Length: 67
Image (tube, rainbow, N blue to C red; front, top):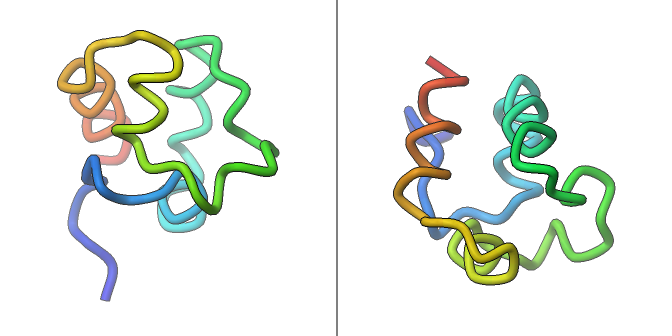
């Protein structure tokens, strides 16, 4: 069962598969996550650390995009 909203412990690939509209958020944040070979492995918490963005803001943007 898919979560109602993306969570920080989900991988990029899980989020993109469940919510294709989330691509826009990754593009807005200028993240190369879409199509990245690490997408099946990196969680959103990993991505926030890598791109040095606030995890809560990133998750809020993702959750808003998929609602």
